[in-house]
Length: 108
Image 1 (cartoon, rainbow, N blue to C red):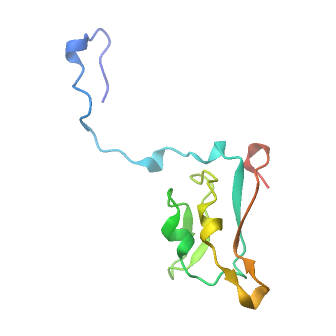
Image 2 (image 1 turned 90 degrees about the vertical axis):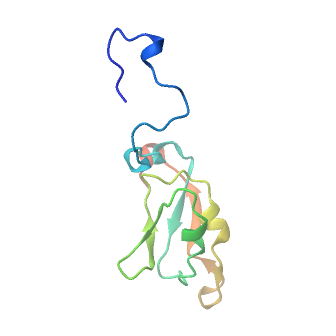
């Protein structure tokens, strides 16, 4: 909602009311994390736990509904995906998602 120049407090609507629909897709929030999940598709067993537990819906799925990676534009680096990622016994107990330190500028 836009408030016109010269408006008084009486012109501002009461708080707590949603006046216009919005979307969090407009706000990329991944730039301030200190860690980032690293995804290795060769280890992933497609259990979907990471997708289920991610609070930001940052786990990307491909057209077949399989985990395809992480959308770093929205990932905040909380690490939940890596914590719930099960070990793959066929890959020596490795995990498909692990956390690594974020570098400056978000590039790794």
